[in-house]
Length: 195
Image 1: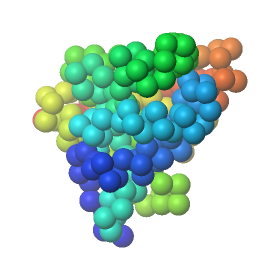
Image 2 (image 1 turned 60 degrees about the vertical axis):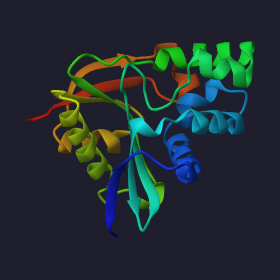
Image 3 (image 1 turned 120 degrees about the horizontal axis):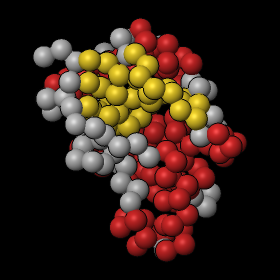
Image 4 (image 1 turned 180 degrees about the horizontal axis):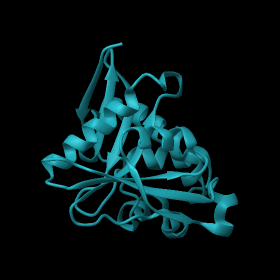
């Protein structure tokens, strides 16, 4: 399998990118939407190509890595975007449900907004290649660190991040909301980027 990593995705690839993103993060995002189909549609439409690194093999999208730029993550799920599409009540519900998941980038840090690999292709180096590309993106942005968060229900991803040099910098919990989001604890990890 010849793997290529590139910046952004085409409109023809949007659905595939959205499905990969939802497959990885839908359990956390589902609460924000009336039903799963609505969630998939809204999240897919909200993905921003200029904040995504895309892995392709044979021309097909096999993995994605979102990142924050200019204070916003890989998906624009803001009030101004959701309200015209979903109406006031649904947009408010989405914002309230997404608030506990919100993270804010810091100066000098490239904050990742989700790494997702096709489940049938995991273990083939796609995630590692996406993270290497994220480190290159950090260098282009003159960031000193790459930061990500991993939930306690994904120990395989945490093991990968550790192998690649990411170190825990903090831990957190969403406490009683764990049943709503499908995880209880998360670890924030960072890797220093050499010039």
